[in-house]
Length: 243
Image 1 (cartoon, rainbow, N blue to C red):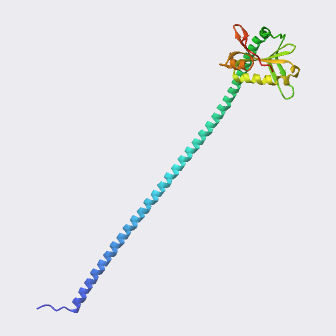
Image 2 (image 1 turned 180 degrees about the horizontal axis):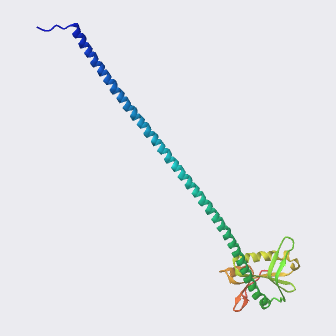
Image 3 (image 1 turned 120 degrees about the vertical axis):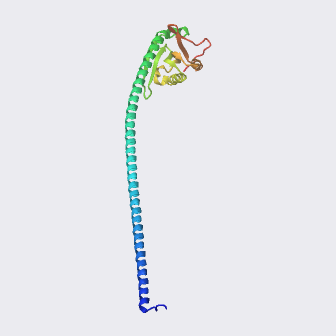
């Protein structure tokens, strides 16, 4: 015969069920709290790592900026140093060139005087042999009349004839043009020769290729070196220009 179920039995069953439910809820709360704590820990760790990454990135950027600033400062320093050295070199080079130009000018002038001193003693004889009755020779003839300044290397004259002789260490086509320009302005610079028949001549030790032919066709006498002296190279068919 079965034992009858009493109200007390039912209450105890209910109470045990309630206790089991409370235990499970408590266990769920514990697990939830543990999961939350773990999640919070992981979130905090993530934040810490993110902060560490930010710190390292900031340090790396600061280091990169520092190195870039140092590199720029070094580049600026070297550029300034190079500019100072280049300026000094340029100034020194300009001084050397100036001295060299002065030396060359002096050498050219002395060489020109040397050539001139060879030509001057011979010009009377040379032009007398060409039929000119010239009797006087002047060197370094200058005129500063008005605003026009003119200097003639050698001037050979007679009563009604004047011959301008320009002496060059090296004769170029441009030098011939300058002589022609001198002849065009000679009488305005030396008006007392206005009624003279004016002729022109060029003398040189070294003559560029075909420049003597160019001077010849411009009506100029060409005086060249011949042994220890000089000679007029124009042939007998030559017709000099009269200015």
